[in-house]
Image (cartoon, rainbow, N blue to C red; front, side, top):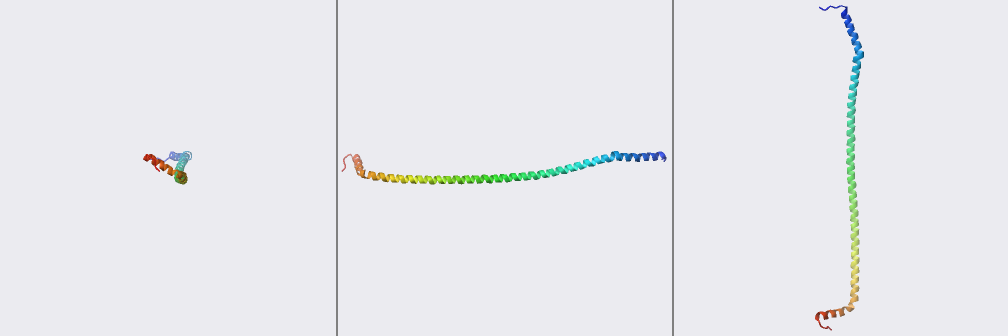
Length: 142
């Protein structure tokens, strides 16, 4: 059987003192360190989630800006291309008009020149006709 004597009470007191000392020196500091570690881990995870969310937001904005820039660049390119085409058409039309004017001027000059030559050759026309007839017929024509 179990005897209850003073050593039992000394051992219980010894055990309680040891538990008190271990609690103060060992258990509480270890638990505090573990709690701090858990808080840092949770804080780090939350911070990482926030950074990921911010990164996604920034990436979305960046992608949108790139898309907007591409659309704007395409619009600018098309506008510039249309303006260049319009200017080219204007230059071509001006060149056609000038060419038509030059052709008309040359035709008028040629018509005047033909009229002038006709007037110059008209008095000699009878003589030329007689000469041509003589050469073709081989005899003198009156």
